Amino acid sequence: MLVMDLHSALNNKVSRISVMARLVLSLLLLCGCRNSRCLSSTAAQKEGAVQKEAAAQKEAAAQKDDNSTVFTRILDGLLDGYDNRLRPGLGENVTEIKTDIFVTSFGPVSDTEMEYTIDVFFRQSWKDERLCFKGPMEMLPLNNLLASNIWTPDTFFLNGKKSIAHNMTTPNKLLRLQEDGTLLYTMRLTISAECPMQLEDFPMDAHACPLKFGSYAYPVSEVVYTWTKEAAHSVVVAADGSRLNQYHLMGQNAGTENIHTSRGQYTVMMAHFYLKRKIGYFVIQTYMPCFMTVILSQVSFWLNRESVPARTVFGVTTVLTMTTLSISARNSLPKVAYATAMDWFIAVCYAFVFSALIEFATVNYFTKRSWAWDGKKALEAQHPKKRDPMVLSKKPNNVCSAGVNYTPNFTKDVSIATISNTTTVQLRAAETKMVDAKKTYNSVSKIDKMSRIVFPVLFGTFNLVYWATYLNREPVVKGVTST
Image 1 (cartoon, rainbow, N blue to C red):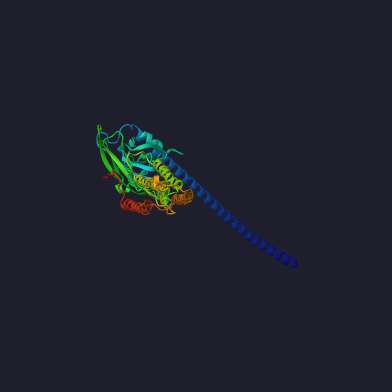
Image 2: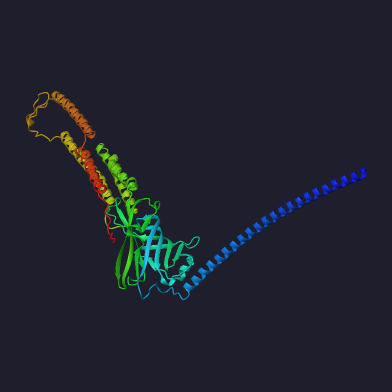
């Protein structure tokens, strides 16, 4: 019985353990299933995201390919049958070209060649209905090579001497096409243009340098040029665009005019750039040297009139200096047939210097004449007129002689001869001292005294009038007309 009880108890424990083991095993299996399901769902989600991203990229690429294909088809369709030899609206309406200019660099300006150099972005806009399109974009950016396949304006610069279209690293051109067929064509150009100058007021002068452009072949009945904005805002200069050493860029304006030729009437667009010359360079290089040369020439008035070598050096040197300054001042100007303000100043300074030399010659002439007059008097005193031998003369020893009836007394005659010789020696010594005194005479000429006052006063008055006239008046710019 006891054995049976133990056996039954053991069986019960084993059964309990087996039940618990089954429960634990089932729990483990359940957790494993859940983990596998979670892992599989996460992997599925990641795979789905990757597939969606790949699908989006394929769709974008396909859409991009579709856009490229669409624009390619649009351009092919636009250029199919397009004749770039014919202007837009031929035979129907006038083609309007809207223009504006942005100046990136202005200068330098050449006075001798009367020209200036300018670097600009030149923009033109017109409408060509043959290029209208419908697409996913309102504006189509085009390559500059397409410009050779469509009609473009034949714009040229009337007063241009030389123009350069920049091609580094590629042609500096921009072309934009809108849906309605409006084209924007921009080029970067460097232009050397004529600038007529009136140099009467040089170097206190001002100029208006024009830039003129228009159609080369089309008259106003076919092509008309206008400004994109108002004329005052269609020509703009960059804030740091001035490249001028001798000028101030005072401003610019724009206008339009029509010119008549044998081939018809043409529209000409005009932009004027106003320049005012800087005077500082010329004050240092020309005006101050001329002023100092005139002052130096007047120093000779204070030298002794007998100092002929010194005064000659002053006169000749200052005249040659003024000649050199005059030649060098003219080298920086074109060979105009009229006198400039600087020419007048140099001419007056030259006149003052030359007058100082003439004044010295005059003083020297009268000085030598005075010496000659004094020498003549000395000679007359040294050789007096011979007296009549028949006339009685009073001797120092109170002895009177009367010609024929004179009875010689050798003793008295010896004494008389001795006294006469002594008197003659004393007279000659006195005359010699007088002549030496005349030679060392060092008086001041009246002409020098007057010149010391007159020359500086006249030169100062001239400078006052000259600078007051040219600096206080407004510079006059000739030949400027704008509408």
